[in-house]
Image 1 (cartoon, rainbow, N blue to C red):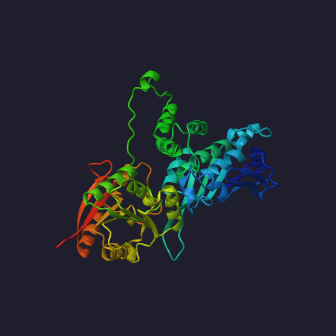
Image 2: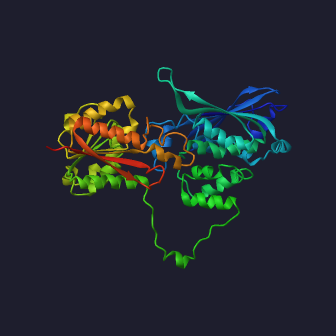
Image 3: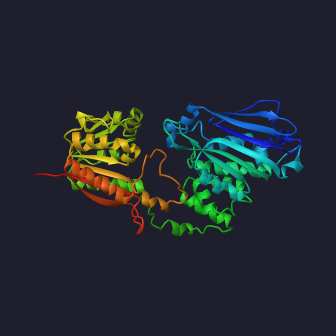
Length: 454
């Protein structure tokens, strides 16, 4: 991944003094996730550009997977600017971030004409503009298109910022906002991240119109950390109960949407009396674990098109350590839902939990024929996001997940489910999952299909 900083200040080569990196050399730094390089592709008194390039080592990145789940899979982490690049920036340009320069102290506090480019950044043009424009930047954010045969725009942006700012201010903006745009930190976010946010946001974050969004994303959506950070920005201290009272307070943890969704699926399976269940598109096995804990399920089958996902599910379920009797209840099969698979026939129920939205719409009829027509379990439970509810997620400008091919409104989902039920001889009923909003419904919608009996 790459970031360039250009100035036309005269002499422009003073940029080397501010960054404490000589323009005639290639500088190499070992960082926790790989190797960082600083070099100067253009050097003159009129114009000077410094480039920070981060070469991510997949082995080092995988070592952090406990804190960053996406790194277990094939992903864009080595290529698109993110918290990985922000961390490298903080190590390589430490003095410049502090605004310190032994050789050019007066220049370190002087606004300079700057142009910064991040050629591949995960995010949207709208959010990039919202974040950087209030800080005095002229923002040029261009969506990167897919290949011509695919068409449309990808989830990546080519970002160019132009403005007259101190180099310290510019680098601190990047240090905070690159992870905010990416919204997926590669390391565990602990309370000390509040101090980093406040230090780098000094002088600009408190007055930013999107400070709540910035704090929430920078702190990995941890509510307690976000609240503390925002109170600090406002000059307030969080009130804590006395220690003796705190011990007496009941601790009530709010169920996550994922947990509510799982429980809703389990309730539907109980309702239809299923004992032999298919988890289609099981991924890493979140639902499989809950099914295996309940002895009423005598046979549990997880399928996924990804062999890697099945390996992760087997590891999470500790399949190799289960007693033989328990292990006999569980099967993991590689299978594509758009193709007929005779192994899937004859089960009491099948679950498609947050699966259909990952298929291209033209492929849905194949899934319908495979699951409802060929496998034909006694019941099918389908959950999917409710697109109408997305307005309740602050800062969300597209779909909820980058791999979603579509997200349906309640009417669209019900139309599809009703038509599918009619085509293949099922009845269908609908449920809400998650906190109900009067105007937009619930975040997740569930359909329970039951086979029509003569």
